[in-house]
Image (cartoon, rainbow, N blue to C red; front, side, top):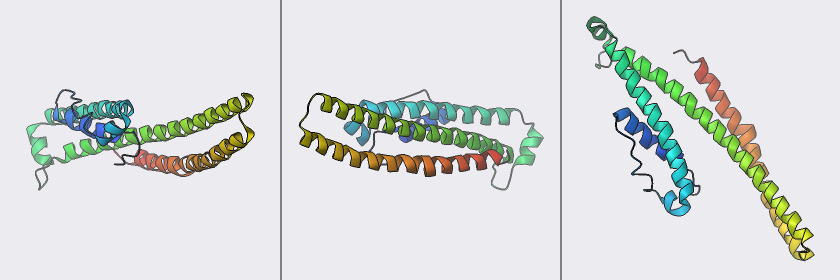
Length: 186
């Protein structure tokens, strides 16, 4: 966990999933128990809440499908499906299927998140350009304006590198994992 960004989605998702799978009511009590909350305030709380809600519903689904599978098996089937560890193969298969579907959902969310970050970076660069244009039209001293333009140009180059890495490496890698999981037999 890096505290250098405001995203607390993963912690929220883990807390929500645990509560949903345990059959507990929603409880956002751990929401503010993070260094990210201290540093970033509402941004961290919002991402925690989004993650918690997604994890909670996934946890409830896993719990419900597990119960459904057990209820629909006859006693001989339950006995036949037991392996040497006492774990039902059928329940394991259902958990694996839910796990794959959950993984696909999380990977799609990650892909969407990365694409959203790229859009935000591009929007931020446009706002900076508009800001510089506004300073120029207001008659800002040319030396100061040149320094601002040089500074923002360096930052823009860095952001463009990050955007390229996300677009050219991160998103295609996630898409590759998604294709692999979609081809996994269930």
